[in-house]
Image 1 (spheres, rainbow, N blue to C red):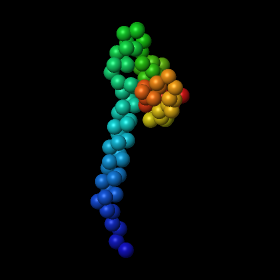
Image 2 (cartoon, rainbow, N blue to C red):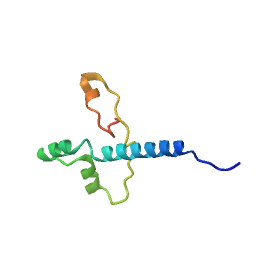
Image 3 (tube, rainbow, N blue to C red):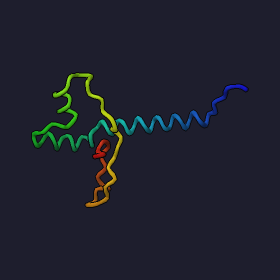
Image 4 (tube, one colour):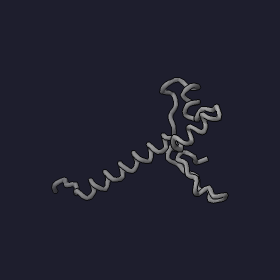
Length: 86
């Protein structure tokens, strides 16, 4: 039996990988440049910036970076930030 991979499954896998890459990039953006600027304007660093200063390079392993909260109260469903699973 020959080992065949359908074009359809490769395309589907490619689409899923592209989606995953886009979600990861969105997560790494920390809510976007507007939110980062707002933190800086208040004299604060972002969480990732604080971790970069506090920890030795290569010692931090982020988990659940793609987790999003499920809160719908207080219009929170309009304010979804990747990595905000707490």
